[in-house]
Length: 261
Image (cartoon, rainbow, N blue to C red):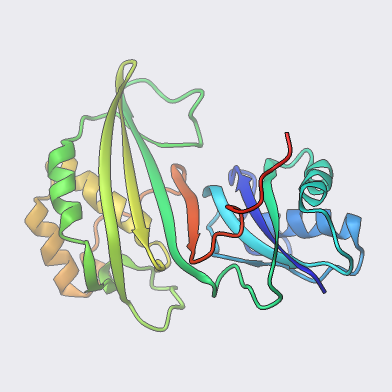
């Protein structure tokens, strides 16, 4: 069965998350149902990572096995037709080796979190960013984030429901940008690692928001990290604002196949 990699974008607001569930809509279900409009016996798909309810993606990657050979561009076009009106789009499709796996072939994941600070409620960005109404200090937050980079036991910053075998992970990058917007500031948190624990990014951002607001110091982040205790974590921020931006592979399946114009 020929295997294809799919580069997927979605708005996570109407979904219970990526993973298929019995009684709630999921992104995986939407893509699989579109695939079965093309091939009724198409098996389930595998993804690079699971995103929670309300989390978005601009670079999720999944793989699917088809019974016949498809032109990758035609496959993406057909899937996009059948995905309507769900807020899910196949940005690119590519033929890959039979043993290529969206999850196990990946060597890094990249996330971005959007936080908007302004007095007025969000209108156009509602559901797409975390809204707060007080100012933050970007430099203080970056100083706290710097203490999380590297190899650590991240027990403090993972959900008690996390199913990972070990809390020890390496965080390769944690960068925070501040951008002036009308009547406020948008803060963007960029993170990169081979893999992440459940709720790790949201735990980081919620904790650093307290640093930026002045309730915590950067040293408090180190103290929380070294406690290896979930109770030492700061608030966990809401899922709105979290985006899976991309997945890294030794051989990018989407780099060598240009999309027709």
